Image (cartoon, rainbow, N blue to C red; front, side, top):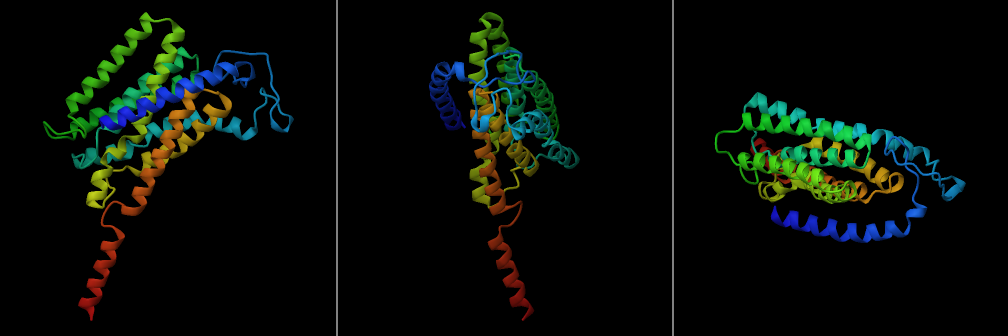
Length: 286
């Protein structure tokens, strides 16, 4: 877990520095962002391929821009069936708490970024993620025995970290200038976004050892794949915002890795075990 945090932080810091330098040099060439994504306006228009202007993005990109906030909400709703099943069984099984606690922290940070950057779609989508993440944590706690580990750490530690993240960010935003706060929260958001979508991979070692990917929730993984694909395109080509597109690309890669593990091992016995069992049945039949 600590290795994941260190790698994500180093990558985000390194790339954000170089991208911010590139953005400063090409600020005059930046594409105008639709008002739905930001209140900042520019009258300048630059030529794009095919003769279109920056104020007239491709149709498919406009569609991605409209779908991305909705898929963010759907992505936050994706763990709901898993949580309902856990509530019915009164057991979380091998499910880790980290995806849900990081969803709450991630949603709060990006809601803050959406407010600072004056981007209503980012703000609205992540308020929903914050509320749903807190709800999942509450239900997870109800279905866990006293003193249970939340993988990693304990449930109490997860609650403490999320609370301190919220308080620390509220304090920073209240004390620093808006521009500095936006940059700080954006970098922090990159870290937590990667953590959110890579958090199911903390169980990867257990998945490979047990040859079962039951701990990887398929609805959340598929929703993450769609959501990260859309926001990667919107953040890079429409908003030109490193803090949006970079963590989404990382989340996309994480979702693909999870689907790969799910495809190989499934929720139960691997294909090799099934074939072996079929061979045993054939032997008994003869």
